[in-house]
Length: 149
Image (cartoon, rainbow, N blue to C red; front, side, top):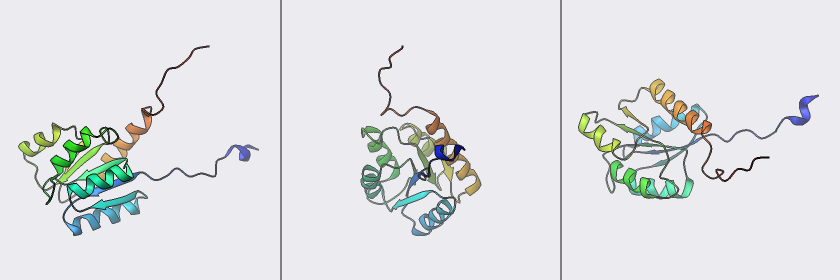
């Protein structure tokens, strides 16, 4: 009876951009995220990551800190100045876990911080929480004046 109301559309998988200069790290993270049905795009440095982020507008970015060409903090700083990317959640994924590095990334508004080697259960939980919180907030594209009857 309610079959006519069902939608044949499946929700598009969340798009995650992984930016890291270590090919093995990218490969492992990409494989695990794709296994969990996320769409994964990758970049090997901050400059490439920023260009891909502008083009693909990911739902979340996993970002290493120390990379050639442009490091993670510089990419994050540029994202925060970009009109489309400024609110994109970023999880820093790095081997550096001292307070100075965490504080440097936090200045630019990171959603979370994960250390290498990556605990995938923890990472997937953080991604799920961030994406869940994002889905429950109204999109800025649709916020406008409301009228009352």
